[in-house]
Image (cartoon, rainbow, N blue to C red; front, side, top):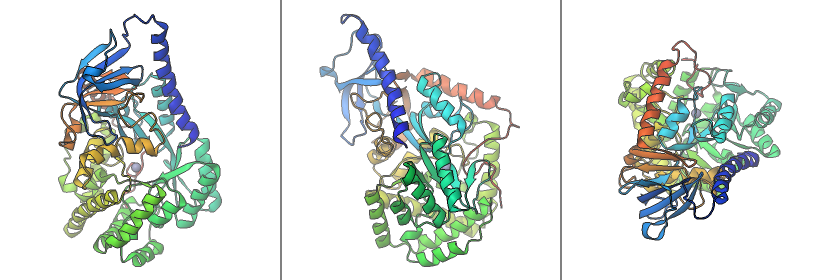
Length: 506
Ligand SMILES: [Zn+2]
């Protein structure tokens, strides 16, 4: 993100916090502090990696945590609203580092908040997201804080349609797209899978020149270590990341250079990279991987594996196509989900191919675990809202479980959704941990997330910018989302998206 937008986020937080403090200091010192909320008795898993602290008192005033400590040593301001949370667990508000919020203001943003997701990184910079950010920051709309990408910049053999991405074919176009991204108010430039190496380098160079960060997919034609050296800040998904750890890398690179991709053919691309990823998995070299991971660590690259996406793509047989959470999305979305799911992940594959896909998920889980053990910071991201059966908000909890299955401890997984993305976005002064002085973005859980990561789903209450959403309010919000989803006209075409919306089936 640019320093400017980071300042904007911090400033808006400071204004909100300052305003609340202003009100309370204007009162006589003896007056009751009714603006404060005191959570009493919880175990706090603060996100720093420290051991959980039991029986804590946590005081929120305005949008900040103003006190935190053992119950017996932490005074509760007189008149504060008391929230008894003995037996409950407080964790930092969660981040989804790869979101695609749809165009309905009362759906994705609310699903995020109801799921304890208080900050999202939007990977496709549709104009309405900037408008929402203004409203959320002003306190007139319920939704997460957001960091917003540019339009997607892709190469000539792109898999997407022109509606949601900028296709560049020359060095000048690539550079112009970067400048336009900055003008549009994007926090960072998003690169995509079809960028050829020379145009990728032009995007990287122009981004550096004008001082905007870039992140996104690791393009098929760009070795991961090259992307890291070029300054790519995060790599979204595991697509094409395993080639550089293969003993058959030269052969894979030759096949990529031969191309064969046809513009807009998403299924063709998925099928093609599947063959290459299958080759890479069968010729994986732990030694090459270790070198690759060391490069990522040295360059400070973050990985956002989005295993939730792979779980659907790799194991469609295990997907619940009658998932009860479908009721929170408009039929216009779930309709294309069902269609895309069937044609992309089921009908297009032979049983033998389906078995390969199934096995690849194990490889991806191992790959992710090895990356984390090597010290590569992993971030929880979902792609929720675009990929079939990956649910906005809820998907964060699904991905947390995936990361634990990949070998991360529950603590490391939690950090991948809290302190790690906060650091990555340069927002760690404000967000990512439960500490005095930090923003009051919190999730109160009914059970211990370190004992079982599935317990992050057992949400009792959410605090977003100091606003408490109780269990009862949370139930009402979800019921509202369900109503809003049902009210969307089925015939309205869905705008935007990343891969699957409006994608050609080959
Ligand atoms: Zn995406």
